[in-house]
View (spheres, rainbow, N blue to C red):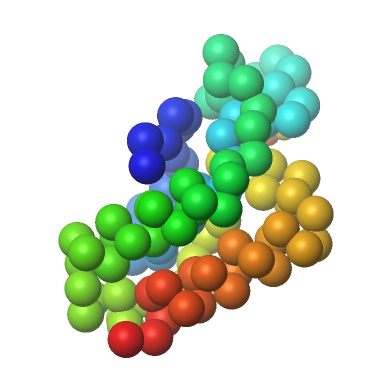
Amino acid sequence: MKYNGTIYRPPIEANTFLLPITEGCTHNSCTFCNMYQGIPFRMLPLSEVEDYLTETKQSYGRYCERIQRVYLVGADPFALSARNLLESLLLLGHSLMKT
Ligand code: SF4
């Protein structure tokens, strides 16, 4: 998966796993923010989320078992329907949290 956007990670969240499920921002008009300028909003298809999780598992292997916290990223993950969010979370659980 090739993520198209800016990743914001506060230092205190250095060990948090970031799972992109959207790109861009649905609003993208706040005058103080340029994080997603030029990046159209899109919801990532479940297949891309799955590819990202597979690549993560292949790269980090057993370290995935240590994941304590996950952030869903892209500016607006809650633009997804409850069903799509649930599908992404179930995929996450099956892909990384179990070995
Ligand atoms: S990411 Fe947040 S702050 Fe930036 S334009 Fe979108 S709603 Fe505004």
